[in-house]
Amino acid sequence: KASHKALNRRSVVEKRLLLALDQRNLDVYYQPLIDTASKKVIAMEALVRWHDEEIGTVTPDELIPIAEETGLISEIGMFMLEKACLQAVEWHTQGHDLKVSINSSIREFRGKNVAKTMLEIIERTGCPTTSIHLEITEKFALEAESETSIMAQMRTLEQAGISFILDDFGTGYSSLRYLSQLPIHTVKIDQSFIRDLTQDNQSIIKTIIQLAHAMNLSVVAEGVETEEQEQFLVENLCHELQGYLYSRPMPLNTFQQFLDNHPQQKTI
Ligand code: C2E
Ligand code: CA
Ligand code: CA
Image (cartoon, rainbow, N blue to C red; front, side):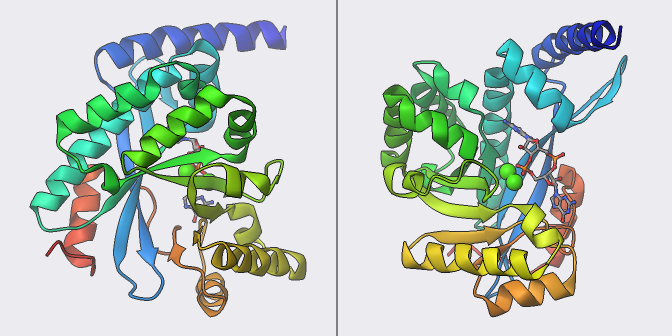
């Protein structure tokens, strides 16, 4: 009975999602990434938000798996990419040199033309490719390793100037081979390690940071909520920080105010 209910919910969500995509009714929230050394805002991560008038708020944790299963994730991905690119261009015009990070699911890379479609969208918006970071998970990386077409698409995007971030680092299948075989520029330490700074987690965090330094990768910590966590990460030379301590993900108008009140990288 419970599974019948779940199935029903899924089909309702799917139906409403089709409509929302059609009407471009999804929202983008932005969360800043802070450069540890300068304390400046250097990038923002775009996160999908969806409030449907009939079924209410659908969280990313519910939305993304359904979208992945139904294939609608590609449309969410393209929607987010276009919105984030247009916003990055707008910020550049205002004099803010901000990179923009977009989350990508493996499912999006199954299509043969993802790289091409993404590059077309980016070009249309006038956003420099070097401003774009694509966040992928270790699960993605695992599949990418086995699928040469996905690897090829990643290389195409990398050659065009896009950087890849390995998200939720440390929680996946942890094959360190991805770091050398895929075009990864940054690792993002999973928030579960940061949340609870036990001795073990401290050791894991230090090891990941050292690994990143040794491999010339950039390293970000997410889920930074306290000054104690910040201090630990600063002492251990983590390059970038993200979390509620700086800001929750915000709608555009709030992010704009945040930018106006915080130091950040300027263009020129
Ligand atoms: P993620 O990419 O790991 O994103 C970080 C999540 O942690 C976000 O949840 C963010 O709101 C939350 N967060 C940020 N700072 C803190 C903090 O200091 N403490 C705590 N407790 N949480 C923090 P959100 O927005 O609900 O997204 C959940 C997941 O859904 C994301 O995890 C990502 O995997 C996926 N997602 C979100 N937007 C998109 C999208 O546009 N496309 C795809 N493919 N996936 C998305
Ligand atoms: Ca992410
Ligand atoms: Ca993450």
